[in-house]
Image (cartoon, rainbow, N blue to C red; front, top):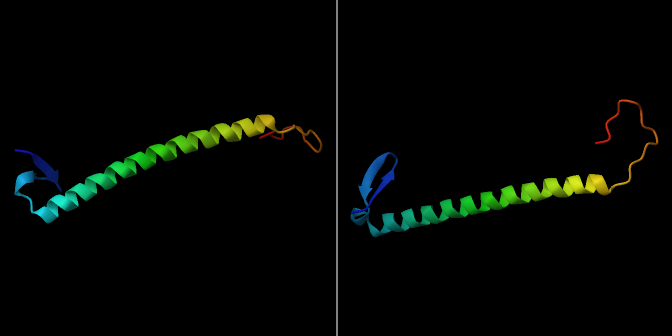
Length: 73
């Protein structure tokens, strides 16, 4: 028999009501979707960082008004 642990308590999956099984399925779906979206967010943040760095390289460097010790960032 398959057991699931919910709030540190084991339950026999077959003994759960249809409503409880449906809620568990929905919870599992949402958890998987959140993990997928978090992966997409990580990928988008990495891409944004790369594009921002590429933009810095592509911009013309202006030395006008630059004071020694100023950062070019």
